[in-house]
Image (cartoon, rainbow, N blue to C red; front, side):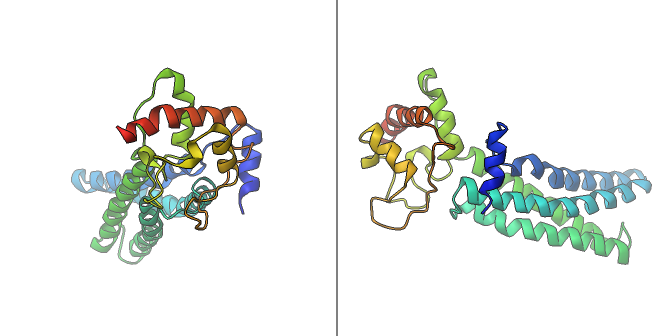
Length: 238
């Protein structure tokens, strides 16, 4: 659905997810807003409470494009796979939007320093902390052990394209189909054909998105294959 966006970005040399470029805005604004309101209450700097309100309003505005870009990245890079961190983020993101809206509403109705308003701010802060944690789990929690310099490029490709669903050579979507002993790894040609047109060996429907030449070139496919069979799979079979 959103492939045209990523195709355009790829043509100008940008091949990474878009969501991380925007997610720092609502998170930073909420954290900053809470810091400002605490400073205002502790040191009696009432003007800073208005700064908090402005931060929360801007965070509320920014959270919607951030959620949209997160959804786009999920569909494009993960093929819509229902990974646990993604499930949690899909719940927390709308919750954050709701809490920010309540913070704005309560601030107008009860006052920017009223208990309901401050409660909404604190709950928003807790929510962004949880979002940051599960975002980190998604990006870094599945990182594989470092490889030798020979397979560094393959390691980067694996972490960028495969690591979320196949951490350490496993399979978070179908645990009974890990990379270990997979027939698709018997030869480079077999592996390349599989990533171009994924067909699960149990005959089920494929969740894995296809990686055509524009996403993973022939040379990159070889580097990815070499990393898996020489570094990742042996670690799983020891």
